[in-house]
Image (cartoon, rainbow, N blue to C red; front, side):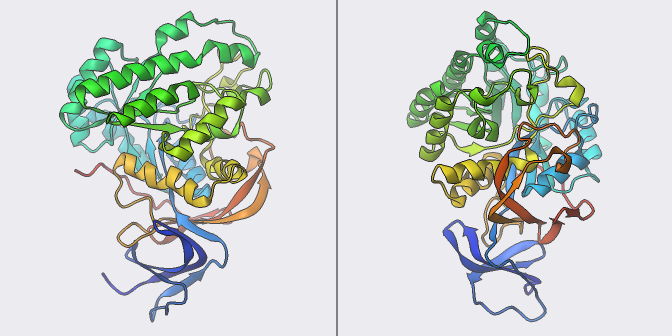
Length: 445
């Protein structure tokens, strides 16, 4: 490794050993050392001194719907990765559905990669999809470098990505377990959903009743049983039901290879505050009550929930109708995830080290991204510089994602991202972006 080219210094650097004043040296886009704060700057190196702003590892968001190609009017790689960079996210993993074609075969993956290649402002990887008819495609996708496989246990909302019934879940999971892959699952039981009251209309209470907690609980119980029987790796996506937490904790105590995520909107928004007709708050599973939210935070604190990801799932504004039954279900949160989570985490007594663990270290580990997720020698020099005590009020006009619909409009949040760095290069600062510098990532053996 050559002599350091770049030196970053802050009184608050978040490292795996804790937060401390430090000097970070970078060469060829890689962190070469984390040194004492007053370490000498190597001759010829450029010094960037951030003062008391916090230097943290770039966030890794493993749950993003970019929708490109095919539904690029909903979102695209250019806009999604700009929004991510503006929010301190330096790596995302794209979901296989809502694009056309979906990422369910190797040729479809190649289409997605070709579209993303020159538009990515941050590093981008890809999940594959597990559908009723593509078991034969799973191993080739794995060999082509997808990070795992997304499946639904209930209808996905788009015709080209059907859900797995019990028999097909078993078939797909058996195949994936056979080559050591990871299945990530939207866990809602379609039978429980069908049995729930379906009224439609603008009342949020009616929508909440239509997606009951027991639909999540039942589906997660099915996943636990299958993961245990097959000794398979399974990840539960966007957990919103606190009722499932005891089951999850018990399964993990038994050694079931189960991990779990939740999302900023479940941690920071509550059912009680959702106005009727405000479908910018609609997502599936839904935002639940404040008491439920308290238990999700407790589960994050004790490790029952591993990580926090956005489930950024945008659409055009016209699809966000006032009828919760027919409106598109998805919340756009890439740019705001860090300040949203930090605002509530701090209020509840958590520190930025916790936020980094949930939104960078553990998400990188979930996807097997060994070069991401920490400020330590040998990792990619991906950073966010945060002013944690500065506040701002969310103005949709200032957001970078394509359709500026947000459930956070008008909220005052703490934590302003001052700049974001990818492999030692500043990619955004004070709203000014460089040309795209992101790379396409593939799973490494």
